[in-house]
Image 1 (tube, rainbow, N blue to C red):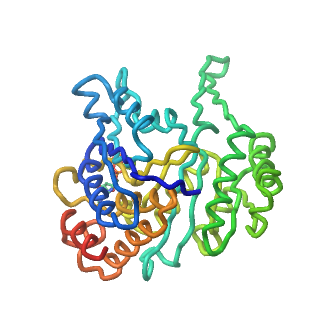
Image 2 (image 1 turned 180 degrees about the horizontal axis):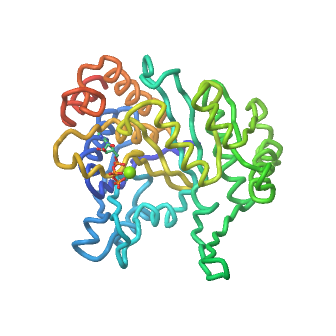
Image 3 (image 1 turned 45 degrees about the horizontal axis):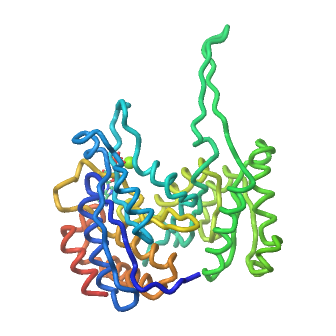
Length: 351
Ligand code: ATP
Ligand code: MG
């Protein structure tokens, strides 16, 4: 639901590596659709591994405070992950998802024009972002036959229900209106069983009031879902999955449409949404001015649509798709020879 806002306050957290090259690009795209959205107010915010190595803090309290109290949404760039465990460091993006209760990771994967990866793809992976094996309760103990490691997998009705509602809500806005629950309840009948049953029950919840009656509900075992995703991606619309399966599925789906530099995502909660390109900090191309800005720009569009500004989001996406289809101004990851700035200019011109 859209609440009328007089201004839209956006926290910008470029963080590390090419995050600092693509977030300014996304900002320009937002400014270019100004007439379709409320007045924009930007906050430049610090976070990241580089900040940690300089100051000992990866996520300053001030950044969290401004996001919580003075922002409606945010755009996050990327964090570089240290190759070894660094004492005192933990990922700021993981912390932000927790601090802002961004329980859903939403990743639309859509091919433009003739898909270099094969068949046309147009689906959304909705990944539960707070529990499953990612509660990180791991123990290791010696046993007579060697060490024994265990991990806890948490699935709650509350988290399953809210991610289920999010998936139905997204399906409602799409032409196909289909939700596929991804699970492995033939083996994990208790945990995945609860996830599956809870989401199956969502359309009948009293507070839903029949709103999802026209959404088709399907389900699929995760292994066969991956197989079919590669063979016949067209059967999927909205896929909803627990954290670990969702993590794997969303990268697999991204591979179907080519470069990482194209795939956007948002992290969403009840009160906040944060756009984030799917790619990392790409240290191999950092500072060369050739990072593909389209994933970040599309993340900004996705964020706008999630906030109810359909028109602004659609205009940005249409411009990005035109630039891709024309194929004249593209960064090297897409086989082109243009710079980040040239691609941004091309998108702005289309807008
Ligand atoms: P991180 O640890 O931050 O994830 P990484 O080395 O895994 O860093 P990724 O950002 O995940 O790097 O990228 C993997 C590969 O894809 C790299 O070769 C990178 O250059 C390329 N890549 C990622 N994003 C982009 C982009 N926006 N434009 C061009 N190439 C990209
Ligand atoms: Mg990576």
